Image 1: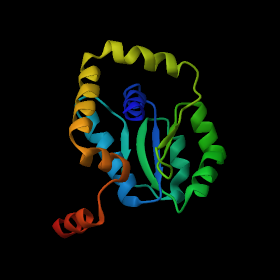
Image 2: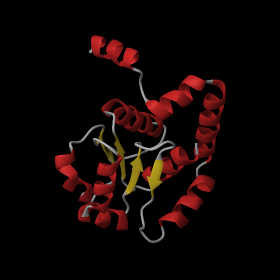
Image 3: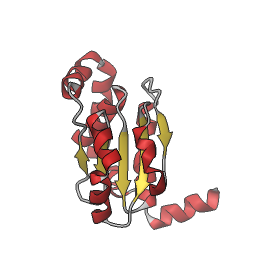
Amino acid sequence: TDNLLLLLKLLLVQRSVLIVGASSHLVTSCSCALKEILKSFEWSGNFVSHMPNTMIEFINSPVSFLIGMTVDNAAEVTLIEKNEQVLEALRVGLSVVDLTVTPARVRLTTEPGVLTRLRGLAASLPHFAMCKASIDFIRSRSPEFSKFMCHGFSNKEMVCIDDVF
């Protein structure tokens, strides 16, 4: 819950988030779930549920975004995090979520002043406290929700979704 709320706060202060994982289903599920939660707020960032690694230079975009990206393994996440463009983006607002480890790891932006803004955000948005309470309630009542937030859709669910579309 803490990482989820941290990501929501970052997005609400117009900072960018890159979600990286080894499964396209998981990356897409997590990025779409975040976007869905943001619907109750006024978020004006760009959204790309699944971006190819070859477009990594997009992370230097001057506008905030929520982007998902698939990698082959955890070592590739390290390469992405050491990429000069990513390092520069981390200094100006980008945070990276690594879904290749359990629990997911968030590499927070090093932009000066962001943590101060995040601390003040929850107090200024009563709706945010309701969102946190809702997430906590759902997670406590539904082990399936927790499983989905950690692992995304199951293979059986993906077959059903693919059949519909």
